[in-house]
Length: 388
Image (cartoon, rainbow, N blue to C red; front, top):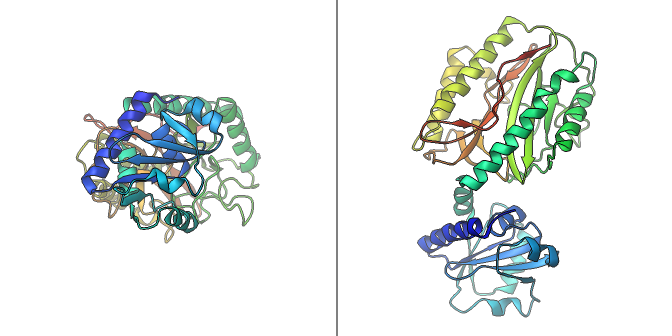
């Protein structure tokens, strides 16, 4: 569980940012934001004034929130008559995370707090959360170790003829037994993910998911991940899963083949590893995210694989790395247009992958922490293709 010291430091950084922007306080309603700044993911709203003590208003479960919360003033959610009285006349500007706030909730709080100006603190929140404390990095190291143990077991159950779905189910069963929580939280609108994907025959199928590989899934309502197609010999098998432990996500991909791959796929895999290794070596404070992406793209193009980089031709994802933590799509992003410098303690999943129509999908993914010496690998098992 979170410690009061950890939460106090997080709230202190948020208050400093609010003061710098002239914002009187932030009302946090998104569950994982409430958890980050309080220590409990109960149904609650957290008020963090720019100065003074935070207050947690709980709808359900109050008893568990009081057990878990690091906020001293944790109490029931006030009535509509009582709520406005908790905010003095000096509170004129209130921050909300507009990136995840439904219009219905906006209107609800606007009615409760008439005359206040609501402003967006989404970027403030996401930038603060992107830098992980030593406490968080320790948990992500543990997540990486636990996920790696499951990946090492794949040769025990991967067989020719088994369905993609059977492979996914076995992997997920073992991951769950290892303590994986399974909650793959995503902040982006219209994105969702069920733990990960194990794909082979359908790996190159296009789909809605904002990543290089989607898979066909099981229906038009669930068009992501494993299908019922069988796994064949001499065909790449891509297993891309998250490990979620103590709420913290790491992301990892490994390649498997029963038999051997054609030389073109082997060369593409070598290129993916070279891109990953260059990026990892340059995950240092001050490096510009966009420039890292452009270097990765340059390396892919230099290998003659630019059109296949990060997706099938015409379906390419526009990034090569994404922040991870309590959510799968945190800051920073190694992408065009993301012209911000890296900071020590940020955690990034680097996933150079290639989709080659008619041949298959190949690539690698690991989660790294930004440090002065370059990326520290949090998913530390061998990267090479596992031949069975």
